Length: 230
Ligand code: HEM
Image (cartoon, rainbow, N blue to C red; front, side, top):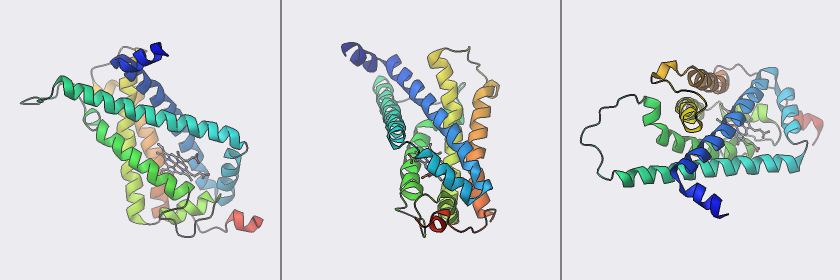
């Protein structure tokens, strides 16, 4: 216990926690993005996918608990590291001339806050149906997404959040290489190929859904839940 407290208290300990929880997040995001592509197969496929995720409720709750814990630890460590770095240099620099930093690195904190706001809104909207989904039907994600994202303001918010997610992952994957020391990091932002690929694939892969909803690519479909007579 004392060892864990010492580990959490150290700067490198917090960075390792951020790296490991961040990797959990990347794993979740890649799985979630692939699942979303079932939208192109239609309402039935999305409904079956929603049921599949709920095959074992105890397991689903364990996965949810791990994800919530990962997000909380990631955000808390980020906040505490920010406070530490401010305390180390309270008056800031008179003149800032970035050396090898990138736009993604300079926006990572605000991007992270935007993502937190997005996740809370997204769950309230699409999983719980509390906000911004006309005619929400539990376990009918196809129609819920179709109805929820056909509002251009909401779809725009999703696309903005996915751009923030891409930037976050770009900087995050680069930071994780340095924290865990798995490869010699390059000084040149565009040479960080894995980071660029993950960022672009994830941002575009997710953004395709709100864009397709706005473009009218998902035809109206009878709700599989209603036709099953639940
Ligand atoms: C365009 C982007 C996205 C779309 C279309 C989308 C779609 C969905 C859908 C349809 C569900 C409901 C699944 C169900 O209730 O069966 C869902 C749940 C969820 N999404 Fe997303 N999602 C997107 C982006 C994201 C991102 C970027 C994150 C996190 C970084 C995220 C995190 C979650 C979480 C945590 C849930 C709740 C899972 C649960 O019920 O435990 N989503 N999403």
